[in-house]
Length: 188
Image 1 (cartoon, rainbow, N blue to C red):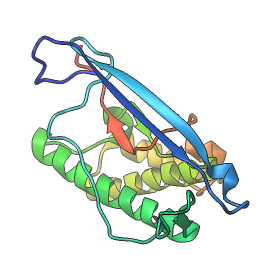
Image 2: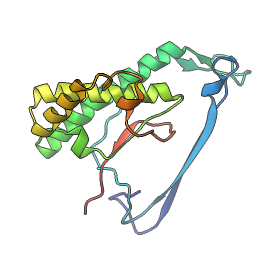
Image 3: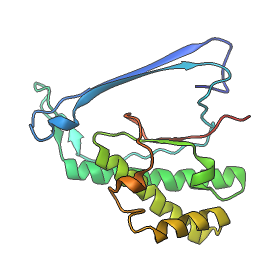
């Protein structure tokens, strides 16, 4: 990973999380994950400063009202809706910032190499990716662009493309993670 505020020293960023649920139905979505990133020059993963989006909502979809218990209280349906609303808000804000900063229309196919989703289970990742494809179609109507129009037309011709939860619409599997974000290619 690279940072433009690099001061000559190398850095390491480590993040870890564990999820355990008391409800037997939710146990398959539990697990643990960790990531370690080296921060320095000439990285293969670069984030554009000022070109990011975030969303915060005050919801009780996942919380721990009983601190004596190791198990959280979870409203799975509400949590899914919150995740998709956050995706909608972040996508819209990211597109607006991108267009304002670069002075051209955002193209999901050309401008993004990888999309990383929080993935408590595969179906949510498939739905989120399909939602990005649908939002891309809305951008096409607002900003006509040959490449995007061709992609959307091709997707419309396929009976399964863009259907939430359809593996064909989801693209390559996303890695497990606790964040949702976009990563741009490093400058050549």
